[in-house]
Image 1 (cartoon, rainbow, N blue to C red):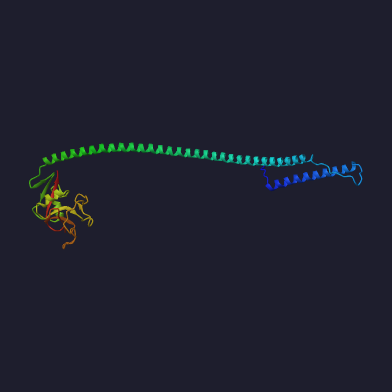
Image 2 (image 1 turned 90 degrees about the vertical axis):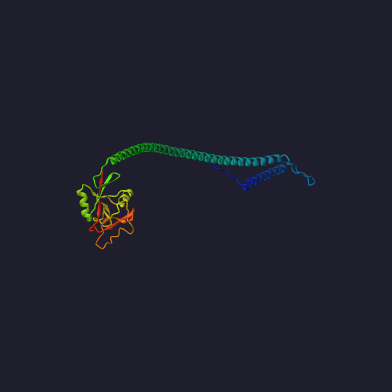
Length: 295
């Protein structure tokens, strides 16, 4: 539908045209009537008086014509405004429908996204619960294994103590916990001292605790122990190949600063404190030694 608009100036021009048309029509009718009167009237003398025709009967027609014209213009304006407002209402309705459709689409998308997030959340929750269940099972299994380990350790210690109680050391050997120790009465190099221990079916002593270190220190002798770095300098190992973990050096040992060559073997020095008594020494020096036989 095309939009119809009226300009106020255009409306005024139309009203003026109606008035002009009415005046023209009125003047034409008056002129015609005058001519008809002149033709039909008798010839009077100069003294006769002439009267102009009465136009009062024509004026209602002119008023009606003007009113009708105004009414047409007003009606046309009303029709135009009606068309315009109908167009405005239709556009507003279209916008409302489009907005409603957009809102519905947004709701659908939001609902779909919410459902996807809810599904992911549910999956993650389920996975979390499964992991929690696995963790609980592993924790329970770990506790069971720990209990078994503790029981086995207790049983091992019990059997070890029983074995230690029944351990008998040969004559000339000293017992400490589950080991027997032989302290030499003569002096030899580190290598020959070890060879003597091997011939006795054992090896130079390996110290595993501070209690054992204190026990050996109380013999008050300078004695070889089974610790050396002859294979790799500054890498100290026991005679069974295990690396050194617990140390009882006295400061500033080990220093490898002997006058007789490299100091690659270790002694317990009797003039130090029990837990700071180790000294590195040339392996060619002659000292007493200690052999250890583990039960």
